[in-house]
Length: 125
Image (cartoon, rainbow, N blue to C red; front, side, top):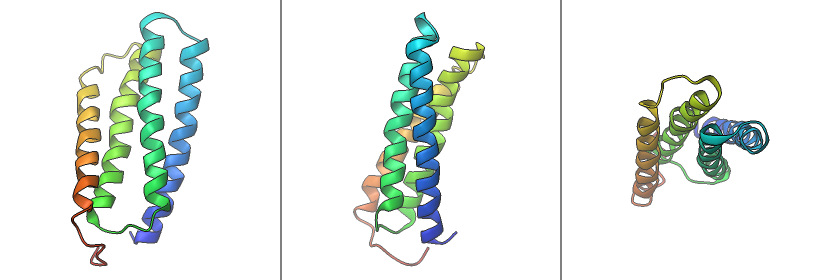
């Protein structure tokens, strides 16, 4: 995928992810109680944060494999981390084992973003 398409993809998915995060936050604040509300709040918080980062990466002028890796890891982290919390809160699915995998994706995404600082904005991808 070309860099321009990847950037548009990041903006698209970041916007959709942000909208979903706001919806789940509202559901947690007004639709459920107890542990489910806490899971929805935590999931939506992390999803919204990383949605904003995806949009920023998509709108930025940066290029390179590290930035693409960071954005992919942020997206995967949102799916695994936040998605698992939503599934546990709303459907009582036993997917708690996926939450740390999503958190690990977030950490690796931030490390990939840091690595991009030392990578030239190459056009080799």
